[in-house]
Length: 157
Image 1 (tube, rainbow, N blue to C red):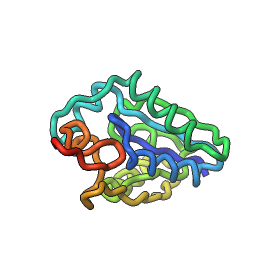
Image 2 (cartoon, helix red, strand yellow; image 1 turned 60 degrees about the horizontal axis):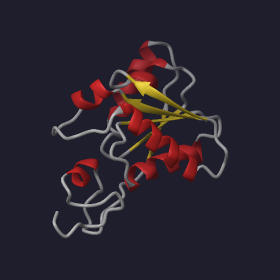
Image 3 (tube, rainbow, N blue to C red; image 1 turned 90 degrees about the vertical axis):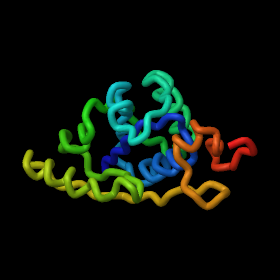
């Protein structure tokens, strides 16, 4: 199965690593990591927040994947210019790793794939990684100083 995983991935945290681990586990025919472009990263934020540059995020993702990849997967990191981009435009993608929050988007992605004559993709839902306080880890919580990248609650957060 050729698997994609997409996101802004910045700042990188253990929830993102969980997504990468799922992609690496299921991506025996390769993994495509689709990183949002700098413009798309800003456009898709529900709440404005600082976002590392695409170059910084690419380096961080490449380092994280290298540390996690015990199977020697073929991993390609690409820039995502539109919301559904790679998942709807590439017939070679068989699966998409998503969080519980983004799982409902699979229906729209598969509808667009069918319109293009592509087979639907399989959704691979990676569970949330929770911080020490029981809430999910998120980049926004990290940027605001509430938690660190591993979900530890910060004293001044």
